[in-house]
Length: 103
Image (cartoon, rainbow, N blue to C red; front, side, top):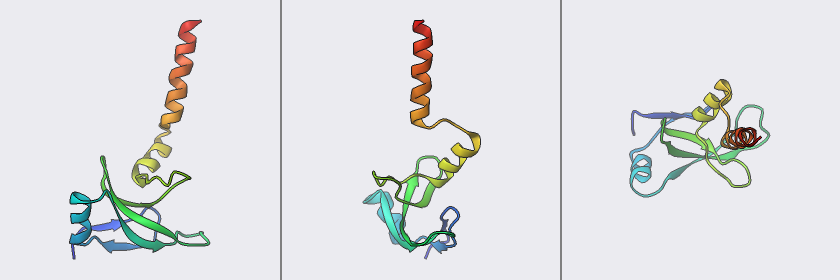
């Protein structure tokens, strides 16, 4: 067992990351399945994955949306709290600025 623990955002589990899981992420795959967990208020369980965020290191979250993407919960929460624009909003803002410049 490792002394490094992973806490999934607003999830009531705290479990150690095994040496095998860390080795797999470093050397073989970009995500490791942790198991099915249920967040408070949910009616069912979802599969959670351990993966590496470029900014925050190892994090855990479930797959989102139709594309089944993994998103760092810390980055997502920070963006929401700081009201940073999403990439789509940022793109739209650039287009608006370019349209103004053309006028």
